[in-house]
Length: 338
Ligand SMILES: *[C@@H]1O[C@H](CO)[C@@H](O)[C@H](O)[C@H]1NC(C)=O
Ligand SMILES: *[C@@H]1O[C@H](CO)[C@@H](O)[C@H](O)[C@H]1NC(C)=O
Image 1: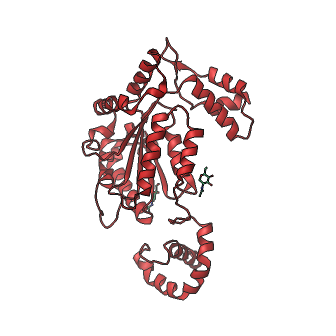
Image 2 (image 1 turned 90 degrees about the vertical axis):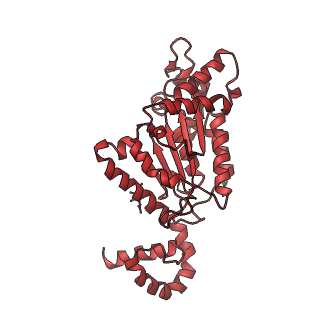
Image 3 (image 1 turned 180 degrees about the vertical axis):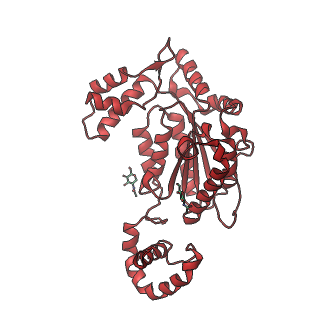
């Protein structure tokens, strides 16, 4: 690294950490201390400008907007009355608690395209100014990040280092694990300590971090419940968490394929909330299409939305109530119709 770059990097670390040198690697600490003394005046006058332009682990960049999340859940996510309610309560309760005993661990379950990824994005958007682009939000996909089970040991230590490194940098880090059911049980085991009720682990506290697990596990039993309600002529909004909770944990426990559940995540109550996502109906697909048009700056056109929704495949074969891919293919279908 050339001296000027090194200087800028040090300065960045110094300013981001509010002048404290704790977070800086040992070798540079002595340099930094000297610099801190010399730069105090400079820092005092410029740090506000600096915070403004560079993402730091500070309230300028990380601040939960409850109204924002509530409005987003109402206007952008469709057909998920249970998930919306749990998520708003869970995230708000966790963030407004000054002294949480453990990190927040959410496990989102449901069929593909029902909004699990999307809601993670909404959460990120309303905590981090940079949303999913934030340096403090980390997304892992089994197939992308941990594809070969023969490299399990490497993945384990790498993942542990990443979590530790990132939480050391910023306590309010968020980790999203997609396709949790495809993740190797050993790998899940390796992150278990970070989810637990420890004050500190190797000097690092994980209690302000958020972990979100996404999986299809339990999707079938959620769908069955939704279908039962539909067949009985009952409103979908009447489905309550308790109608799904037992089913969900049973399905999740008994699903040999879903790694999460081999481990003691459930036994030890490390998961704070199981969040079910219901399969989406025709009217929700229409809502997704309308919202997408709006997001693209078009005037929402009900005719186009209906065309898109009619183009989608529904199941089960006889009733054709639920969209096979939820709202997942709406974007490309809209490209075609607009
Ligand atoms: C929070 O979200 C609401 C609704 O989206 C928005 O109007 C408001 O400006 C946001 N507040 C902050 C501090 O960003
Ligand atoms: C933080 O996590 C990312 C993966 O999202 C990783 O590439 C990076 O090295 C981690 N940072 C630290 C300091 O460990």
